Amino acid sequence: MDKIAFVAITKHGTELIRQLWQKRPDADLYYMTKHAYGDEEEKGFQLFEGSVKLQLPRLFAEYDGLVIVISLGAVIRMIAPILKGKKVDPAVVVVDERGQFVISALSGHVGGANELTKEIAGLLGAIPVITTASDVQKTIPVDIFGREFGWTIEDEQAVTPVSAAIVNEEPVLIVQEAGERHWWKHDKALPSHFTLVSSLADAEPGRFQAALVISDRLLSEEWMTILRTKGVLYRPKTLCLGIGCNRGTSAEEIEAVIFETLQELELSPKSVASISTIDLKKDEAGLLAVCETFQWEFICYSPEELNEIPFPNPSETVFRYTGAYGVSEPAALRTAKSRQLLLEKKKSGNVTISIARKGEKG
Image 1: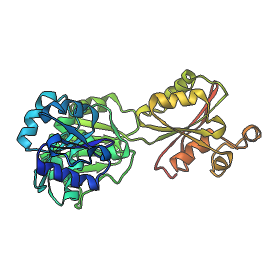
Image 2: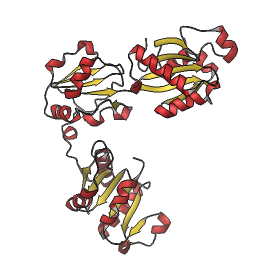
Image 3: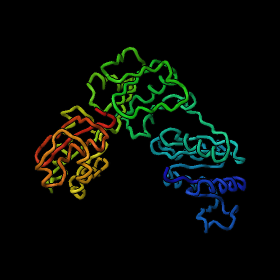
Image 4: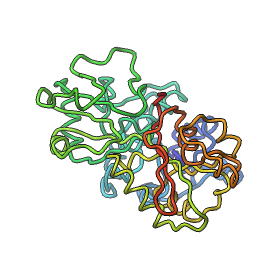
């Protein structure tokens, strides 16, 4: 979380958040003027008069997480009128005045309140109180599964029924074709109601109540229909694009070549992680614009770095112009830390493109 606020309204609550600030000095503090210590301006603490309820709409808008030392019931009543939804509401964590319990009250998963609760409880030596079923049962949290790796959900339509199937220990299929493999974090084996396979070709969806699919491929309409009602599709950031282009190539042409190529290979644009190229292109406006539009990482390598990578189609002509024996192929391979290309260099108009997948050693 980038911005966290600690809030209190009582004398003991103020003392508690001031102590907590010593361990989390990046947080902002808010408490009532009548409990001022006199050093608030020096430390950047915020004082307020009147009901804390009047402060909450602004705090909701400005902060990613709120740690509030007020009774849970009072917090619920005060925040109820300003709630919008779990995708936009901040994490809200409630702490009792004695610092004995830290309660995840709002936006536990998506907003990060559960993790913040654990952190604050650790700092206070308190008991964390988390009621989210997947956390209590130490199972897969469907709505944030793989988020730490950058995975995104293609369609959230079935998140709720799939979550219910998991916490109710119904048969669940997990298909992982791509992406990071170390997602199971608990100190126990994967539960027996999960079946894990490495390919959709090995899956029998009819035998399962729900499915989690981790793939960077475009799926068949049959599978997409299944997932709309009883599954969730995760897009890991696995596809590394190597791009070479003539000087001044437009962003529109680069984008068109990328999307046409991905469609030909039946790969999802939502799994693209990066565009990499030679450092001669570090200021290429078209490449920079495409990366900015789609929030893809832009990586540039020196000719020497590219020449360190074995790749299929070295070119003396490219070497004469750039000092590297190739651009798109070694750039993609180096970024993916792979020895195998999904696509060897393909020339289309002013653009040359290659694609490698993270995690494939060849």
